[in-house]
Image (cartoon, rainbow, N blue to C red; front, side):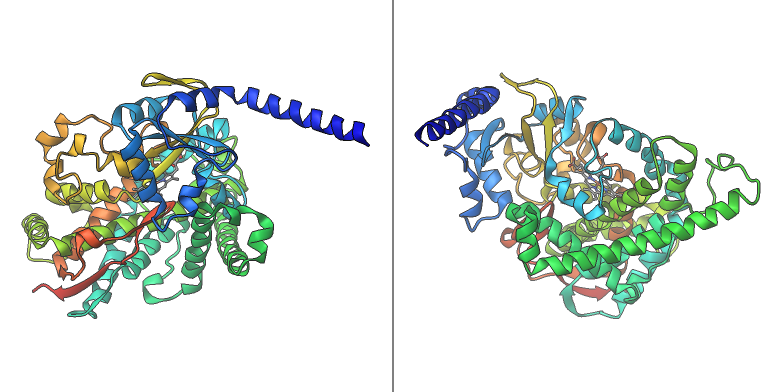
Length: 502
Ligand code: HEM
């Protein structure tokens, strides 16, 4: 018995030594880098669980205290924190990085990996194929009528609330979700008229649980999740989403077959110069037929990915911009003057075609995304050793890149870095700054594939709202409470008073 115990202890000792030896590079680097004192097994995890402060604030606090290139431990996971443009540039432009596992909780919802969480060759294939589908100007132009129609509906609905004070987010969310559903699935969900509410609720509930699993990692444990009050809601929501998307997909597949197989038309013949609106699912079906490495399941997963990545980000950014304008009437009037000057007649409809002329509005939205980048933290894993600053960072290290802290650095944005001021984006100020000082859509090969789409939608909705309404608010900029759960949210909501313009 004694011998067995001695043997077991010896084996444990050898295994521990071998584990520590394999990870020696992390320990050496950790020793040399600045960062908070870390305890065995828990590392610095206690700072996140034990504090009433939000994760985003704790990470900023660590960055302020220990500098741009510092480290901390989450349990046994070694993390390097970055907030300087120079370091971001090296990392985001290197082709030796994978996504960190922050999006693994989304793949659980999707039932597989989509663009957000794929890595390696599978990601390269999907991204190459989908770049065209999401970013090509002719495809985006074909969406103009959809965008214009949805924004008109939003204005009509909001006119009913003239003189009232309320949270504008749910209205903007329904409009943005309707746009994304229409351009992704080719169906008018009429979410703004409260139809298909079950579907929107399911998407919101499912993404809420994804956020929860990210913030409170113990919910990633299947048993704990199963025993929690969220399990039933999560299962029900994911089933609604998947059933809906699969049904649409099958219907589209049938239409596609009828159009091409039975009519003798060439699948490739009308690829460019698109006149009619072409939704994402149709494009995916075309890819699954014409390209290798993209099958039916990929189509379904990527369609849900577009939906999840597309509407909360745009709705959050629009609502943030409106709240900030309500707090800053002087900027709101400038946006209004610009829009009025650009409209050829006295009409009150801003169209997607017009938004490229809106330079001040563009600065204002950039400033909104600077202070409130909707994805404030991104993660990467080094797939080879990488030299950053004075450190050689070993393969397998996970990086936390704080876009939030980068966008508020006083050394870049000056003493009023924490104030809302669209002049930060005057051309003379932009040219003076490092090219990676402002990266709300990330940068490099893994930047946001929906960047152009988002730029159109956000500008269109903000311009149309300001053209039709005056917004005021009792909320104070300094009292805004931020919450992070993959996306950045305002705990206060977006409470504004709306009055119709003449
Ligand atoms: C204001 C709006 C938006 C912002 C600020 C934004 C920001 C970002 C950021 C920072 C990333 C990188 C995430 C990371 O590396 O972890 C990203 C990735 C992505 N975004 Fe967006 N996004 C927006 C809107 C959209 C829209 C409208 C779509 C789709 C229609 C979209 C689809 C995606 C996808 C699929 C990825 C993953 C790309 C890849 O890894 O290849 N986003 N977005």
